[in-house]
Amino acid sequence: MGTRALTCYIAVCDLCGQTSDDAEDGLHASSPEEAIENATFGTLDERGGWTVTPDGRLVCDMRTDSAHEDVHAAAGKRMGYDAMTVVFTNA
Image (tube, rainbow, N blue to C red):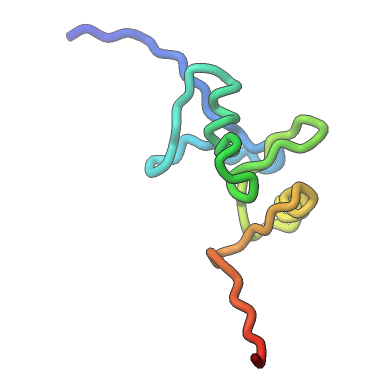
């Protein structure tokens, strides 16, 4: 049976060490840049995914930690479990 070693890259959160290689959604990239692109969703949706801070830290989208939430808020992202916000008005 033939085998070969493969090198891949995954994103790692600079705050908590969480990685982007979970069993369900993990993406293994061929370069560090591709791993960051995958974790941050590139330019598809700047409101979702991981955040790269101005000083170059990569922060995962954990929703229950104030340090993570502060980074995402500073980047203009609203992290939460809801997919949308509904506002009721008296029309």
